[in-house]
Length: 458
Image 1 (cartoon, rainbow, N blue to C red):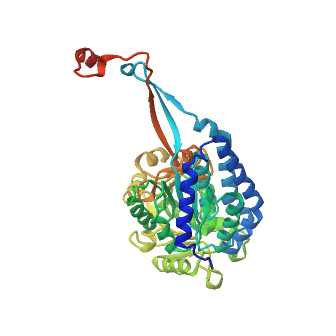
Image 2: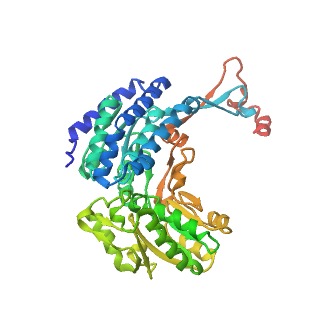
Image 3: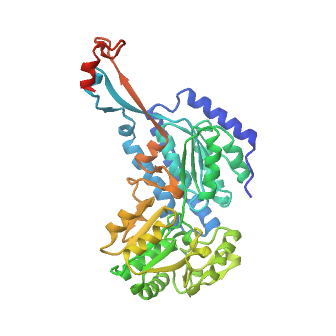
């Protein structure tokens, strides 16, 4: 069990970080680079411990832990170390003739004291990747990992305690009571990853202090398979995207929207690919993650009644194991088609033409990701739909490129991060106009004697 950090401790940490930031300790670029390198060293030191903890909490193999968690954070750090000096440099912008002889620039300054709340599904990546942006921008940060992955949270606490002074970066532990205590404090930015329902709660709390928020949420990410798709390749990439973390991924393909002419071929190919990836018995597979807790397990099993199981369906409560499962004959109004599934269950819907698929997607909330597998309809689907990110003839991979922004739209979130977007998310872009004193044109002053000439210039 994770022990809650007390409200008194939280208040003390917030006070320490405000004092530290006010002294300008984080403003120097060299100091930020040193902190990023220290974080990298800490991750490398604790790599084995983090991987072991991920196995204990989620049955996540070392390979998957490295590929989907540790390597992404290390890649983010590398990108920031390489480009931070350039990103932080003041940017000169054009100044119109009407402002002569002034000059204009934009400077990036840190927002200040920030709060980062991470979920359980990718507990390392989704806590430490935003932290890279906070450090890079020159902010302090309080980190709050999920209590649902206690082994990972304890290792992260050790890593942060050993790497940073608490006035710069600190980690607090606990349940939703701790979240409530944190959200009652005043921060300069709150970065939250989680469900839309909790995102609304965070936004309400932040509004009391007019605190800006970055919300990385979720939703039902559609996986559209058109009649001209390469079925074998589509099935392989879709099955991999759904198997990853046992579907407990905010950008997992949530449901299949498949052209009716290739539906049976796709289901057959998916079944083959699930077996190819995980073997005849996924329960024995080294690389197949378990459901995080019994509550999530029971919720997922409840979806089995919303359709006919045409593949999979095996489950074992003692291990919180659910096999990859394909559901056919599912009503668009059923719970499995309304809720974000967040598990290895694949409901199937069909369409007859691309416009019908587009209409099906746009009648629902904007998803965090959209996947289209086909040849001729990609441009049309992208043009007439909206999502946080998208892949054509692939799944998941847009999160891997640290040069791409990652974020949601509408109910799937607001603002983006990764790479320079992380730096921007934790920064304020301050407009500065510098006007010399050697010339003072009289046009702008009352009583506006030269207004007729000024009007022509404007």
